Each structure stands twice: as structure tokens, then as C-alpha cells.
Image (cartoon, rainbow, N blue to C red; front, side, top):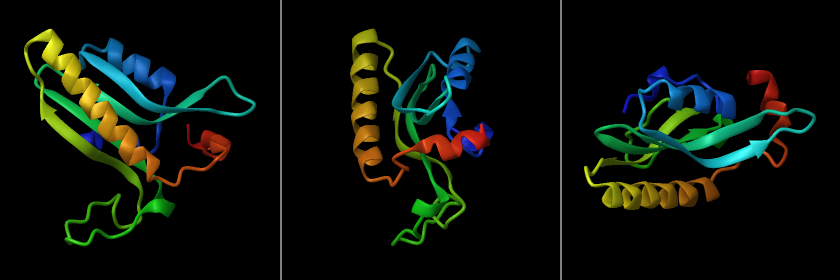
Length: 130
């Protein structure tokens, strides 16, 4: 999945709903969400995207979290710019039960990845980016 079409910031919950309604995705499953103080908006920095052919777990790396990778395969997110990164990607099974299992597995990998991120305790400072 090409993440270049995503905005260079975490998504709002409203944007996630709009994307899911666009028929480009079979489903979008938030893997994490922040309630923004003094706002009715929610920030979604981790998602599982489900299309007809793939299940992709993706997360937003803050610029302050970014470090070069040891193998030298750096992306913009790895070297300090921040941005979306693919955490896990699988072929989407055609059977419903198998697809649900695959989405669940991708979500577990995404949650494990998210535990290692240094997102702010109060993400309200990110509200201006929305």
C-alpha cells in the first residue's frame, strides 16, 4: 500500500470515517486514538487498512521519534522527517473468518509497535496540524 497519499500527520477520526466511506477500503480499524483536550476531535496515529487485496498496519512516526535504521534502509520517517510507516502488510484472505484473523493479527502487531513510540502524553499540541 502506498502511504504517500496520506497527509503528513496523524489522521483525525473524521478523516478515517471519510476514507472508509470512500469505497477505497473494505475497512479501516484504528489501532490507537487520542482524545484531544478542549476539542471534540480525536487523533488516530495507528490504523489497519483493509483493501480487497491487502491488510496493512500503518503508524505515524513523530519527527522527534525518528532514528536511522541499522540496516541502512531508511525512509523519510526513519531519518527524522516523521511520517507514516508500514508496520505489517499481508495479502487479504478471501474467506471472511481468515480475513478477520488477519486483521486481528495486524492489529496486534500495530499495538506492539505503538508501545515503542514516544507520542506525547497530551497530544493537544498536535491539534494545530489538523
